[in-house]
Length: 103
Image 1: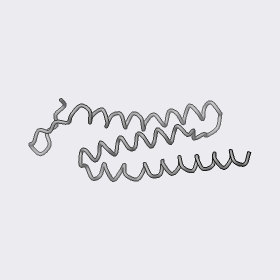
Image 2 (image 1 turned 120 degrees about the vertical axis):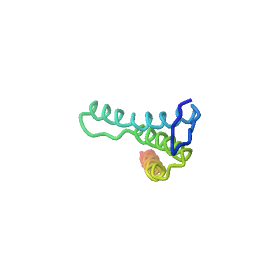
Image 3 (image 1 turned 120 degrees about the horizontal axis):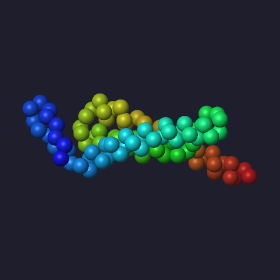
């Protein structure tokens, strides 16, 4: 396993936590490419719904890794995003239901 020397103590992180941490970053980072490609396709700035799903999943995975690491600044940096991403998904769902009911 990968080891880290922190304050003279060798610390080993299980491989699956590395997968969660890197996976969260990859999922979260991929949302920018999704948004960019969607905007290029429509030749205007577009925020596809999948952007919010990638944000939510990537944010939660990264938050889980931060909590596992017991890293307060890392936790604080990632705790606020998921509720905002979930709220955006809720608002999109609500708008779609209203549009379906009106049509």
